[in-house]
Structures are given as C-alpha cells and as structure tokens.
Image 1 (tube, rainbow, N blue to C red):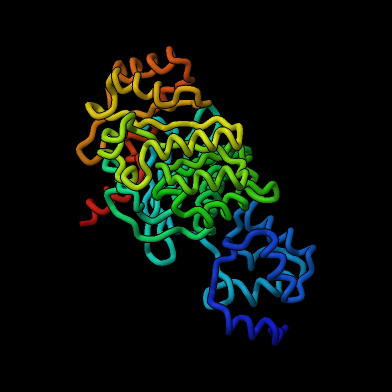
Image 2 (image 1 turned 135 degrees about the horizontal axis):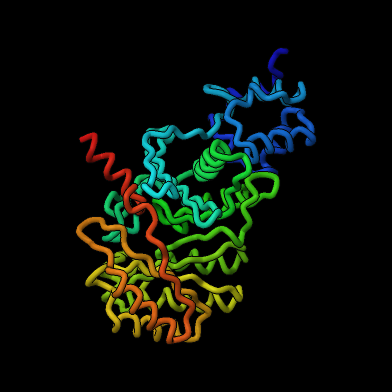
Length: 367
C-alpha cells in the first residue's frame, strides 16, 4: 500500500522525533492527521506504554494502524522509539538492587536503579545527563551538566525497569518511582511533568501519583509552580544543612536559592497543597551529623508537616557516611521534637548505587 501524499509530505518536512515523547492526546492528533481513527490510538498506546513493546512492526495491529506503523516508525522515518542500550549492569550481593548504565541515542549515558523492598519494587530514574546543581558530595554533581532528558527518555527508563521485572516474574509489578537519579528534576520541569503524566496514566504504566516522589535540591520557583499547578506527586526536598553556611558548603545551589528562601517556599507549598513534605538528609560524617545540627534542623522545620528521611551517604569524592550509632542519635533528637523520621536503608552500596557513581566508575575502568 503506497504512502499517502499527506504522510509523505510530513515525513519530509518534519524532523524525526520519539514516539515516546507524545502524550495520549498528542498521539491521537498525530494519528488523526494521517486518517487513522481514534480506536487505534488505544491499541498503540497500550503497546508502547503498558506492554513496553519495542518492535511495533511485529504487532498484530489492525491494517490501518499496521500500515501507519510501517510507514511512520523506524530509523529515517517520522518517529523512532526510545530504547536505551544497556552499557553496564551490576547487582547488589543481596539481590535486591540492580543498577543499569543506559546509553541514549546521542551517546550520553544515564543511570537507572531497580530496587526491591519487602516485595515492593521501586525504580529510581534520571532526568538529566549530568547535573548543574554541583552538590559536592554527589558523583553526578561532580560531572557537570550536559543536557536535559526528553520526556521519552524518562519514560523509557520506567519501561526498561518494567521489562526487567516481567522477565523475572510476569506477576511482579513496578509500584513506586523516585526521581532521584542523575540530574535535578525541577530544573527540567516541563519534560519531567510530561513524562509523569504518561507514567501515571492508568492506560500505561499506571504508577499512582501518590507513589511517585520528586526529589529536588531546592529549585524554589519550581516548588512554587508545583503547588500552583496542584501536581499530585510527592515532594522530597534534599536539605543537608541547617544553616546557610552549612548548606552552602555542600549544596552550591543554596547560593542562588538561600535556605531561608527554600524553607519559605516549602511552607507556602504546604499551605497551598495541604501535603506533607519529605525532607531528605544525607548524613555525612563530620559535616552534618552532630546532635547540635539535629536540634537546629528541628527548630528550622518547626510547625511544618514534615517527614525527615535520614540517608547514610554512599561514600564518594572524599566524603564518608556516618556510623549507625551517630545516625540513630540524630534520628532520636528529631523524633523527640515531634517529627516522623526514618533512618533509610542504604541500598546498593556494593553496586555504586549512589547517583552518578556507576557512570563515574565506568569512566575510570575504561580510561
């Protein structure tokens, strides 16, 4: 069957882009423009986002959709699929963490981590290649910023994790997602929100919004935008310091958005949304793990609906994680001040599961 003149002209006039970048409505518009009725959109969306299909040509679609796929999807055609290549994979000794180094179409590499917790499975995804925030204890921050990820490149990480789980056991489900991999999610706001719309769509991966956490180092304008747009996802703020000096020494972005500005934005977020904020505190030996720091943190967050997650640092860049006794003392002080406080399990330390660590180690191994 020949290519329609309308489709042929669009193929020549439009730059190739990812089919995974398109939301459901945009996908429907693209198909409608080529005379493919709405009924087929659901079939294509299901194949892409629920089943994670990477070989659309092999699907038993009805003729109109099969013809459209043949003429529109593939190298040199109107659309391609985001199918990152696995460059490296390492597994933790306890079998609960698998970390993947994925190569994108332009050769950039990013990290995706699949973690198991008491039968639940969580994927940690990257939102940028590199990071502009420059946190001194973070392997990604030490690499610098390369570029933002497109929505499809974020979605593709979730689909990759789902395929891995399905290969282990078809009954296993990916229930949780955290945007805590390489990059600052709120620095890439629009692409991240487009991706999350697709990931939380019940017709696709269907990860519930309440099971998706966005971790930010404190991009104040985007925190306020999250509140104003009533985004349904959980907000996790990486704090790490209880004074301006303490935080600025670890998080250079604090020089742009001060600790006072960040706490004010968090209070406004809570007032507008009525939601609890999760504060992430990476415990770094000799830097932010003292009892005095814990007392200052409790004072800083006073009156706020906050849950504090204490995370022992995966050692990097000359920084060390705390001993468990010191960490649990920090936790007890916060709990005594009335804050729910969780001492998080340090996952994947033997597989370089900290943000950017596998990519950094791969560079060393291949140098």
